[in-house]
Length: 427
Image 1 (cartoon, rainbow, N blue to C red):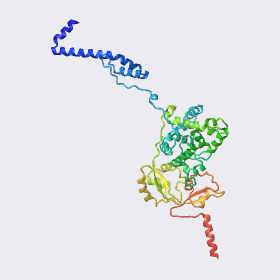
Image 2 (cartoon, one colour; image 1 turned 135 degrees about the vertical axis):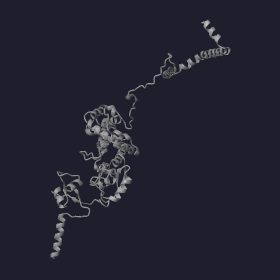
Image 3 (cartoon, rainbow, N blue to C red; image 1 turned 180 degrees about the vertical axis):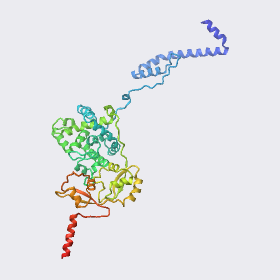
Image 4 (spheres, helix red, strand yellow; image 1 turned 90 degrees about the vertical axis):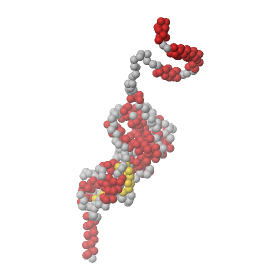
């Protein structure tokens, strides 16, 4: 070894030898300083937590160089399971997991799976603007899933209790919260207006009960039903209230259904609902039209199919805007406003809708009424959303289509007027 060192030094210059010696002295000095500081470092390390020690060791391990001279670089990505990477959904309404909730999760996964898939597919059409409206009223945004279990996000939903629309208002409650319900218009079907009404109602219920489970139960059964139950059984706990026979099964199941639907809807893939084909979010702008404007005219002015206009305005029941409202607000597809205004001014005088109304009397049939007014049966049926087998009830109001330039009277009225003229001529 000594001979090898002597050989190396012999081939080096004098300056190179001095440089090597200086480097050796610096290395020795560094080692001495490290040795003197090691007790202090050990003392500091003693006060580190287990997690901090683990982190320090990890950092040191990552900085170590490979022992081999061969390249040890490996830039392949590690595939973590999606379940580990996916963040758990957040909820802004109380969520509990109990036997009833688990029962309805399974029920939605199995018994009515096909229906639930349809409900989920429709959800994204309405949820974005519903969330915004609920937020504007200071309410939890997850209350949108009440509409899921109420109607499956179907504005035309109709229950045995005669509740209508996305939020299933009965007529009396809908009117109390500002919704128009009459022969021409049913705003319980209007997605925007009915959501605003539902937000107001839910806010009142929460202010009353200070509990979202009781508020939801009140939305289903009526607030006074819940108040009487709380007084009778001296409890403010919804789950305790369900232990008695006082509430109907529908109301007892309502809250666990809401929780189960919310859990699934916010993470459908986790519960086996994969490849849902969500509908596009509803987007529209509003224009004012004169009274008795036909939806078919609006569609023609927008240059789109009639079904698209009907889909945006499900509250219009007779295919025309109501009378005595010179500026009725109607919804058209977003981005069509300029085209609509340009075409509507040109088309409106040519296709103004004309009609008469007829109050059905006892024993009258559709054929008889069509014959009385000398109109074809098919337009009469179409305008009133009826078919040939529809049964008429006494007191029902029908629209009678008229030609554009003709104002006709029923044949009975014409006979009476002729008879009166004949009588006058005899005198």
